[in-house]
Length: 147
Image (tube, rainbow, N blue to C red; front, side, top):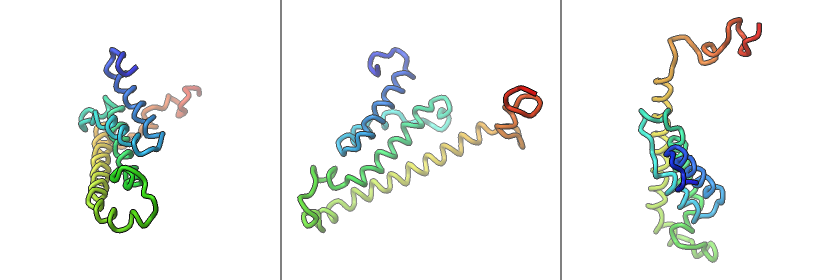
């Protein structure tokens, strides 16, 4: 579907769904693939409402990176430790800066996503004092249109 679709939005949705499928496998190798797929399209704040899949991909990429912290020993050392003593100080000291970088990336993506959300809210806020519920109600005060 992803490669055969002529519509760019449909291709984007298919790629997003494929990335989600990799995330749901919950294996270290699949997290890497999900991270790569999510990372292909990152929205600018000005286009996020026109491209909601890109926003979801941005959040998905942050989620995939957060899961790297769970599987850090496998991802950075090519396998699971035989026992806890193998992992000991050697791996922890050796991998600390990379894991710390992943943590910083997660914090940065969280801040970016918060800014994106704030920008979206500001752009789509109705007239002062109006709420989304108030604007969508039918005459007579109920949302079904029946009086």
